[in-house]
Image (cartoon, rainbow, N blue to C red; front, side, top):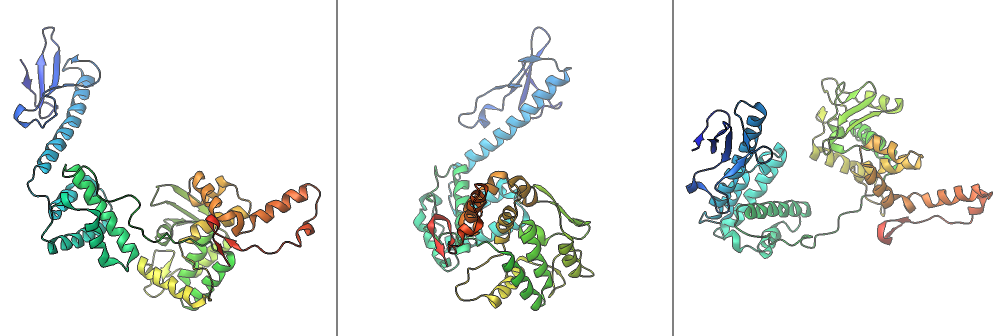
Length: 400
């Protein structure tokens, strides 16, 4: 006959002594609590010796670990059964379920805030339509909601992602079997092509930033082009923390990859010249005397770009500096491994960036042909008759 133990194994663990002085442990919740499909008993540990001795620490530890895991699974199964039989299938209730899940709780504070704000907009839409049953919602309903944001492409994408999260929560709760959203979105505009910066582009934009009394932005542009880091990571670097003795040293926020980048004296001088007393940050908004806020950085750069743009010029974005660093390092004969060590990219990602941007955009084909021709005894002048190449994009798109 079994008995429940309270000594380290926790709830629902039943210990049964055997005739030879050993014990058998079972995970056995009360019959009335069992959700459909859950077995009445599961032996503990699930792998290993079936019988053990309570004086054996390894046996007891194995029983306790498996019992804790099964309790968590059992509680989750019971919760899902309760959710699937709630009697109400509205978006407000679905949002409550999502907010209680680890998927939401484990997000960073900014992302939790963003999704909570998006869900409030969705619930407002639902309230205006008398809270329709989630099980009856279709992609047409989502399109109806998104139509209010037809002139805000980025917001539409963000909100559609939030809808997708809610439908996945509904699947988890057992309300629906699959999401009504089709893959690939709703015919949104193609992602804009990231244009590659040249050294001249960097110099012109940095000069204009200084003219507009934003030397911190000028230094940031130069540093991004030289190091290939993400804007968010670089804008948060601090003196004597992430920038120490001429090196940027930090873990990248997206991947956790640690970069350790020594910078030349030219860039160090530029950074020293824009250091602000009272601010720990390397790159500062000179209007506020502290680090750039994302929106302020966006508008500051936009002002610089608009001031020097000419009709027909390709539109440059700050985020393009990351890929531009890869390309300019490759043109300087840096190996793929050396590039990845600086930028923090995976080796395969460096290859894909080079494959996308390098073949015609920067005349690499001409360099390769000349090098091969010279090795065969030819002369560089043999290419004098070749005209300049247009700037090529992937899939054959050409820009003047």
